[in-house]
Length: 176
Image (cartoon, rainbow, N blue to C red; front, top):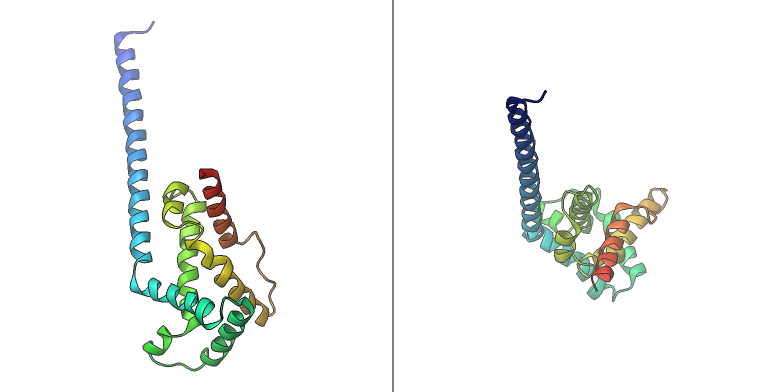
């Protein structure tokens, strides 16, 4: 026979579960927004801005949007400077470092997206397909050239940055 004590215990237990789940949801949402704010802060940093600017400048102004020429110049710069040492200022002008900075940022962003830490509406409202065009136009062609120099296979569509850019394009099409 069920007593009032049993009912009260069930209600208190259910309330405790509800409060625990609500706390988990609130903390997860807070973590998402905190992570998102940190990503935006990093994206706005001078280091990322300089790196993105240098890569786009190479592609647009120095190579007239000629991908083969861009890759050739990048590999030439990479071979010239990879063993030369130099100062911090020299490193800031080193295209290899600039590409790595940008690639690592987008890898971090794509990992957070694919692991559902940050939802697509937050990610793709800031980093839309236009902002992510650097991935297929600059980062992947250069990465494939470096891989070719070391005898490795080129990246295919299963590569996370390809999939991330594709997700941005699909998000925008779905939104329209």
